[in-house]
Length: 227
Image 1 (cartoon, one colour):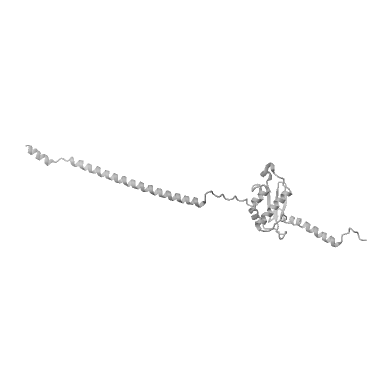
Image 2 (tube, helix red, strand yellow):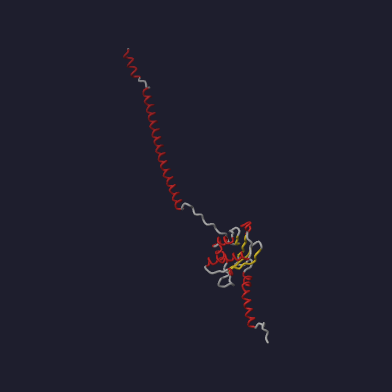
């Protein structure tokens, strides 16, 4: 009689396929995610620097949190459904650095382009930082530019500032013209007054000269009369 524990060839073949498919993700991850991968990114975390005595230990739970944050960023950016299984992490070091790549939700053997991953990370950088209690300085995506600070909006609208500057320039021009007109008018009045003073002085000199001339004919007639 056949052994009850003997596995039939068909069942053995089916079990082999199950084991193969179970191991396939690990095999793909090892092939797709590796240091300096063309579509990969290196990440450095400075947890101790960021949190000091409250620093947490980097473990598989924290790694899962990171993968979930990246999956959210990819889903939000590409409007596709990414899962944690699409975020492959490899080459982890004790000083908390690692590489990661992102696989396509439709084809786990195909990687998402590096540019798309970078744009997704930049778009959700604040959310990723907050999830891990870090910031741009302590959560570094090597090769990805840090998040730009939001521009500060002035309390006064820009158009009002421009309007004020224009009005100020116009007002200064009007004041300059008025002052120039008054100064020129005053200068002309002073010149006229000086000319009148010069004329009066010249006339007085001429009058004084005329009064000092001796009339010789009148003197001779007076002398003859007296004789």
